[in-house]
Image 1 (spheres, one colour):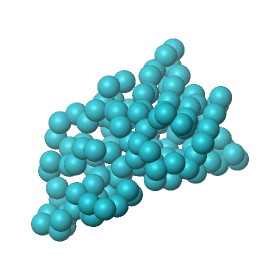
Image 2 (tube, helix red, strand yellow; image 1 turned 120 degrees about the vertical axis):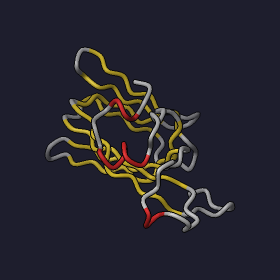
Image 3 (cartoon, one colour; image 1 turned 180 degrees about the horizontal axis):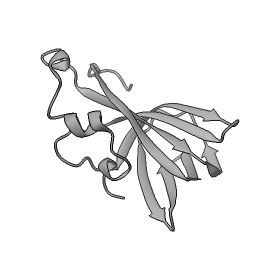
Length: 133
């Protein structure tokens, strides 16, 4: 998959991003594991910023977009050297109806298989120039 828009149709995501948003670099914010079902939730910032802001977001100085994904039917989960403040390179592929998620950087890894992945509603906030997160 090349674009977030290929996962599922999140109406709000599609509304604030009028062009396809490339899957690539992410800055990890949160990782939640629900072993009861097996589900995984991941929150992260993306370098792209919405080009069609809703009125309540306009002229507020927001400069970062945070999205999340909910991943269902997780298997073969591997996590190494988390937490980290380094950005990850993300790849999601679809092979035989199974989604493969892999986020890596030079020292860390998150990878798994999922039956489905859904985008959570995006949000925006202001990050100062000195902040890593």
